[in-house]
Length: 271
Image (tube, rainbow, N blue to C red; front, side):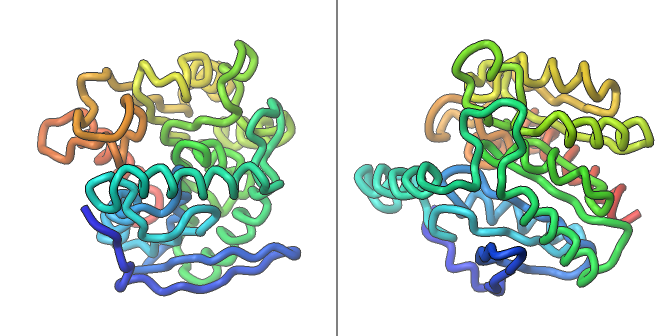
């Protein structure tokens, strides 16, 4: 792949309560907030977003870190380019106060801004509600956003915060007890939460999904894939179910996982 110029997206800035972030938008119909994984809005992420857009949705990509459209593969900018891209994104995340990298039982400070974005897009786009998907470092953000009733289709793809250092962090998710209690109540009333991970993923360990299943019950639908299902040409060990390690081929387990995500958005937003 190569850098994505995002020519079919428009770039805006969304402001709420003293916080501003760029936002990329494309499409028409009910909104789906796609929160990119580390190191940012890569061509793999925009390819996924376009699949969601083609359902008949407006895709909304907040730019929280990284450079939008930058291809991280060594073939695009060389190995040094890949390292530099990751280092810049990591530096921005580490100095930012918007991410709870290590804390357990805490919702990341950027989540209220994301909830406000979801409400804004719901008013703008209409429909029964808003979809939200977080990936990797942002995976748990979609769960915390679901305290707001406008979020009707939350998806957690390999949620990786808090960083899995120790048993407590390995079984926790970056959401406060009070926020989790609200999501739990919404699940009892019919909300469905979809989660995806590879079974060997150390960044999203077994205990994390086990804890969510224990709290949310049958409302948490866990898709856990074997390592053999991952794209062997992807960078690093199996991790990114819908992007880097997706095998986009009929009959492939990752393709089936992708279709399940799209079906959730279709049924909750477009039915």
